Length: 381
Image 1 (spheres, one colour):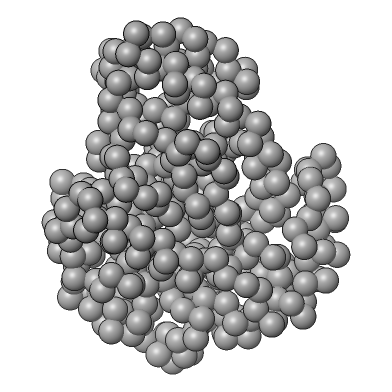
Image 2 (cartoon, rainbow, N blue to C red):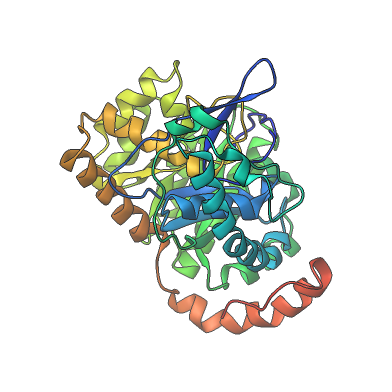
């Protein structure tokens, strides 16, 4: 999770990327035409104004896998209860979204054909000739496989209680959960006392050992202390992911030597991101991941709009450029490796601990659905 504020711009029911002009109108931005789809390993889709639309747009670009990050304190049961409904709605949106996209990109300027959205809150349509900047979507899209990371963010460490731990343990048994996260230390904002941050981080590493799950880390201006805690508690055998890396290679090198995955998001594209790009160029290809941290950290050239999972295309294109991978076979090889890395971390079977405790989640699911969303869909099993 980042703390960058975002602007909830008007939603369009198509797969085009837009930025808002000073006049208040929208300009279409060309999507990178990548050789293969890209994974967003870290997104807070439930913080977006239209989660189902974001899932549908990700599908339009062929995204095979998406990591949804849930905070046990801040989010609780809501994303668990709502996810199935968002995905069903996204599936219903897809045909209209693709039709609207086709209309908006028609060289004859027939964007008016996209005027009727399936959701009344969404404003549809393109901008005629400018929409020709659009990059191709997946011809037969399916929704991404959504895997969950659940934990207590360092900002919320002050709110850790035995009840929070019990709720977290129940959620970790969910079939969709692939990792504990995002967890770690944040000394930039210090929204929780550092002693609490360290204690809660250590406890969640212990849970990773118990459950057999990997951990996704949020570490800001605290890399030395976070590394020391991992050394003390033991590095989870299932893996460690350093999310949204925004520092330099000197800071990152020990983590790479320890075998961590490193995820880069929109900050890689920022004008001020030279040190980040240098670090990204040095990470071994089999440790690299892409992410958005949606709705935060919107990449260039889409700054000023709410970030969503599909924006990972822009970060992936910049990452390939930074690493000297030319469009074509070189870039395709890198992107394919990134997907393999993402699948190795997120697309994993249940751990033996999850299998043993699966009944805990099934029993709790009915209660949480009634408490949060009485009309929500059935549980994962």
